[in-house]
Length: 322
Image (cartoon, rainbow, N blue to C red; front, side):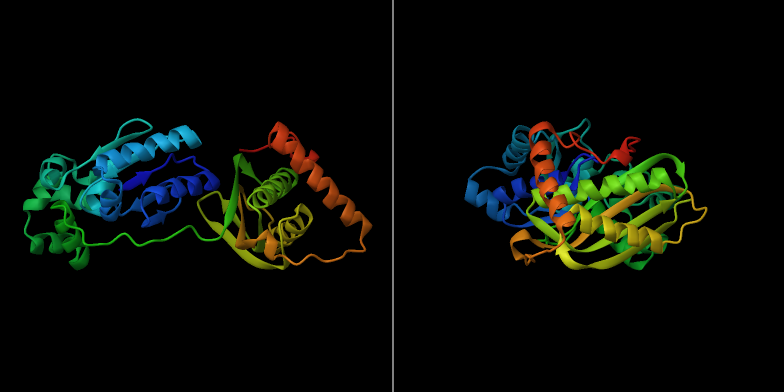
């Protein structure tokens, strides 16, 4: 079973979808940022229903419990399942392909619709006259290898026939949490960038506290006009989910970038190497100002829990970016 979530889905919601999948099958492979695989052989025997029914159950659960619609493709191999999920129109649905129906399903599809075929490979095959998956299935493997290269050609020829021996490998999401802020217009380092960074810090810290986690490291990724990126990771002195600690590290990271006239299009802030909040040692502090801020943080969390995440925001983030 191959599941595609909406492209806009936040990481927390994506994790919840993975949890719903794990309730149906013990073998779930996360494919960040918004896709996942599940092996259904054992699940079919356990639940006593067919694969299409399991896909419908999963979709109903994600809609009713999470408010998230998903596209579910089911087939005898990863390639068939992933191709099926991509053929679903609209925000959600289930498309199950039986082993005996693989050729009829794949054959008429345009060559680019086959999972694993990129635009360049698709154009190469079209130039050779192979414009649909069914034609690729009839091409001798040696010809596909000559067109696309040894390994890529063999894989393309096999997958056009529905052959894909790759197993589903159980894999959860890495222990990270991230927040992204994009700028509607290119921005230089200054008030708008620092405001976006502070907003990302507060959002990330709140996300960690709600998950009862703390970060032992932090990564800052800056995206610039033209598509280039800058990335740096640093360890925190102590694992933390407090605004104060994450803000100090975030400012150190952006200062290390040495920005001058770089035109920034987006900021991503990640909490790395997460641990449970109960594993963080509590230190007795003699800093009254810090203690006061921590008390205010707890009050702010309760207000946000009751009135929504935007009930309290840093004063410098009034000009909010998306």
